[in-house]
Length: 133
Image (cartoon, rainbow, N blue to C red; front, side, top):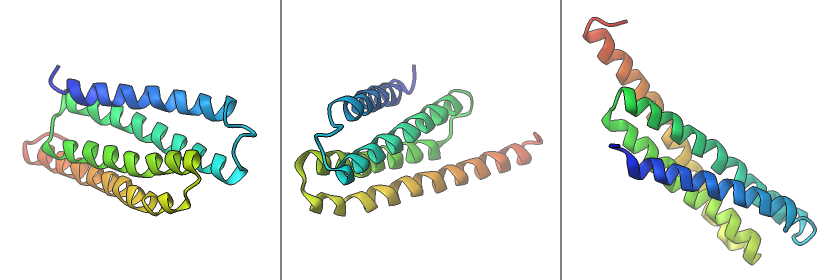
C-alpha cells in the first residue's frame, strides 16, 4: 500500500476522535466549565470532519494519484494538530493563551480545502487535455 503512513495517520486520528468524543461526553460533563467543554467538543467535531475528508482524499489517490493531494493531507493534519490540539490542551489546562494557536490551525485547514479545490481543477483540466470528459 503506497500511502500506508497516511492511512495509518487517518485511522489514528479517527480513533483519537472517538476516544476524545467519548471522554467529553462521559468524563468531562460537569468537570469543566461549559465554555471549555464547548471548546473541547469543537475540537472533536473539526477533527472528525477532517479525518473523514482525509479518507476521501486517500481514496481519490488510490484511483488518481496527484502531487497536490499530499499538500492537502499535510495542511489538514497540521491544521488539526494546531486547531483541535490547542482546544484539547486549553480545556485540560485552563490556559486560555493556548487558544492563540487555534486560528492558525483553522487557517491551515481552510488552506487544505482550497488546495483540494485546486487539485480538483487540475484533475479536470488534465482529463480535458487528454480527451477525457
